[in-house]
Amino acid sequence: MRRLTLLSAACAIVLTVTALVPAGAARADDMVTIVIKDHKFEPAEVKIPANKRVTLLVDNQDATSEEFESNEMKVEKIVGGRKQIKVMVGPLKPGRYPFFGEFHEATAQGAVIAE
Amino acid sequence: MLASLIIVFREVLEAGLIVGIVLAATQGVVGRARWIALGIVSGIVGSCIVAAFADAISALFADTGQELFNAGVLLIAVVMLAWHNAWMAQHGRELARDMKAVGHAVRSGEKSLAALAIVIGVAVLREGSEVVLFLTGILASEEGGIATVAAGGLGGMALGALVSVLLYAGLVQIPTRHLFSTTTWLLTLLAAGMAATAVNFLAQAGILMAGGTILWDSSGILRDNSLIGQALHVLVGYTDRPTEAQMIAYVAVVAAILLLTRWAARGSSRVASPVR
Image (cartoon, rainbow over all chains, first blue to last red; front, side):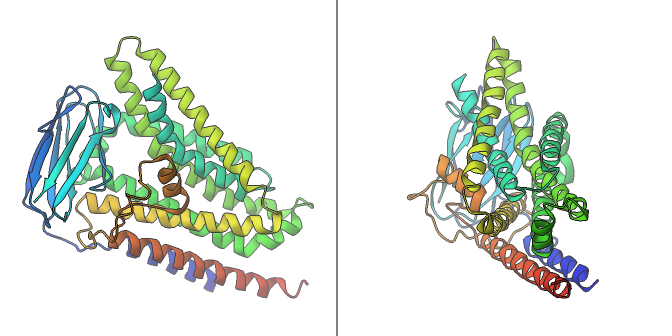
């Protein structure tokens, strides 16, 4: 019985630590829009303020799904055909952060410039 | 056609590696093939369902449905892996003893197999739904898309299966007495890496606002999206730019599982000692 309690305690620790959720945290006001059209990003380069949480709005105007991804910004999200998604990035140090569309990597390339 | 095969393979790689580890971890347990197959098949079926409702899932919880779904299934897998390791620490010895005399241990062993089948199912589900969306996109937009989809889908899956078999074959070269401790470590690090990925999804959704600072950048040495980087990401949770929150989650899960297994093993030796 004691073992079961400890087991659930351990699970609880795992869950709380991984979900350190500051409830009602304010969302960043900064939002920039990136459009996907013909499997290309428009604009291919966007500027955002550095050292700040910024929301990227990705607007997919193609009929097919895309996966908006960036290793540099640690982002990975599916954008359905003719759908929009929002992802939160940063705070980013000043610099260039490439992103790409994984389903059409040959053409779907872009970058965020944090400054 | 080759491009689609590579994309599918990259998605399938993670699930393939996990299946390989689970195969090695359940070496000698009766009924494992059935459970592992069940995990893979339900993962594939689930992928199609998730893909079909992808837009609806994405729109949930103020457009953070996708992140919460990913974080949620990853955390389920973390709990299942923790539970499995604790179970193995407790029953590993009697399991080895009873392996010849097929008895009650096999039945209780199925509980632990069910946990691992869920881990596999979750891994297949996460990557599989992306594969389905990618392939249906090709089917809708390209002339002769069916050939590309067939080559990409079947070829990618075959390569994923090959990865499972190779990793399994490699792991079972380890002498039996070290095999379980090796796979226990692998499953522990797998769980820690999954927790770190889950944390990242919560940050991306804007739910987790703290701990977003990147601790280091080792992308110059090994990039996340290289094949080795990706394999290490699955196996030990490697990431080239870990955030503070990811590091905390990773260390916390390793520590929690170590404490849990140590404590479960102590309980087992106390019970087992009068028998000896």
